[in-house]
Image (cartoon, rainbow, N blue to C red):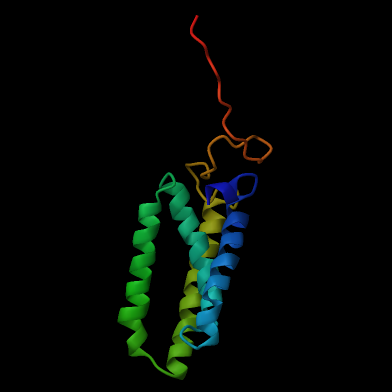
Length: 143
């Protein structure tokens, strides 16, 4: 995420990552293990997760905990409660909820950094132009 946010707004970086993650889940959608509504769920969740990531100074641990919590609640708790048309309806309602919260986050935090107090997490050594530059090695000799 820091590399994606270098030279881009945090919102645009989140949308790029959302498309990649949705593509990763496409095979599960084709075999019927997840709903097509999950594409919207993923897009909304990635924006919220990016907001949390930027406000937690780039902590991957909090994102891992959030992802595990989401999977446990969605898959183990609510998933078995619904089947057939009710399961599809529940998937679309969940997608609407994630997207509504994501819209609120973007409006309140701003699309540039997805944070009101902190700057977005960028790759260390990124130039102002947004192009990542490798650190320069300085060779010193002892006289």
